[in-house]
Image 1 (cartoon, rainbow, N blue to C red):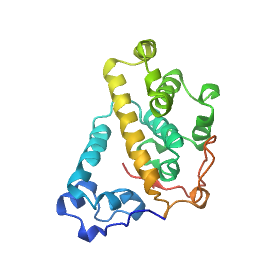
Image 2: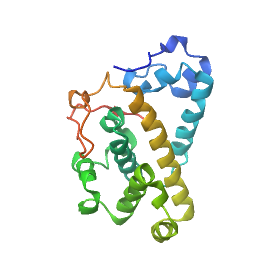
Image 3: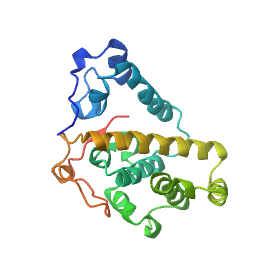
Length: 198
């Protein structure tokens, strides 16, 4: 059960309703915004940051979704682990998601995906290990603009994912996500996993 109450959409300021696409959205698509709506002016900051990353994305949707899911695992954010975003759904199988348990051994991941996932691991768990040598590795595979894009995604997913984990928003999740997991495995949702429009 979420630790902060959901603000009904009808009580959201018009700007927040409009920006978030709240009209006609399913509850699960409204996600954490239902709690952020307690501070609607401040909520626009993380929402606009996330929207800017989506609308200005240059990296493959699959790579970004793999990065998001791996960071969700580190955050132990059950809602973040359960959902799949529609823009990447056709390029991502649940076998790919399960491969995130041991990404260095996963045959279905390419070198860029593995490196982006390693960046996510370091950002979430040991950010000071992202040193000059690791930046050299990143710049061998990605342009500097792409590295910056990856880093901004990491910042969003670590920060907002931990916020979501602390808020414990699990009401609409598939049954397999209702209870906390151990910190050492990735859980793949059943076929009724929520797929979100984004």
